[in-house]
Length: 400
Image (cartoon, rainbow, N blue to C red; front, side, top):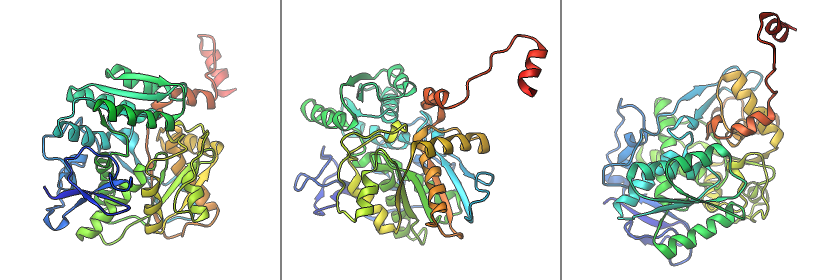
């Protein structure tokens, strides 16, 4: 075994077979650290997927997989017209099996649960985590329990959790309350917690960094822009790029740039004010339900990723999110849920404010598929026209 768990605060080390999610000594977040000198990380022509990079994943058994990863990296040209930026790419994580980036974490997290002998997995969720957990638990043949903030989760995501057999509980509270409660449930009943506070889950998500570098010929973009909700993804991707550099595979780390919604921006506020910790937002609100989180559990890791990489954090309005969502679909043919579009909305704002250099190569991460939240799409788009069933009526409707 060439890896351990380490606290990011007090640096204490722990055996990876211990069932712990935070540091028993100081309460800090944990991360998986490797003896990189023992890692044989090879560049191969194998198809891109999470498990292509198994040399840097902390499991030793056959993975629970439904072929996650290998998502496309689109070169965006039409949408980038008018932006004085060298190159813009979109890494569309909404084309994972369940429609979100969470599949990368769940293939590793559920596999680790099996390796550790755990019998039930659980999470709190704004929707995508529950859908992914339910799917991978079904594949592994173990029960899943998910807690959702009642009335705050898109119907498409609830449907996924239900059809895959999870025990779904709607609580009278927000996501942050659901997360506190599920942690208590896991402690009391011995369920395996697979929110992003679990360091093994984030190991799967860091493969986004590996795929970006792989697809760019093992070069690194100047900047990666992505939505920030519970703040696990930005820290995971940063960790992936950092490991590639430490291994000598690449020679740089991109500027990690996090985008939050104006109604839910604790990480942005901490960066703006130079704070060491976030001040939680008690009542987060945004149309981007996947990032409607006021007290992100991985905030400390996210702040570190942004600051160490020389990145930025800004917020965008719901109107800016919806505009970016529409344009991604109508101009580039990329359908994403609202939270995903915050990366492109953020890019536009950064360019408008002169915060991005013209020679930058940029990758925006879109995290979830448009079908995750079809109700929102119907609400913000023009309604279908009703016409009689004859050619003249169709002609009038189309041409006026």
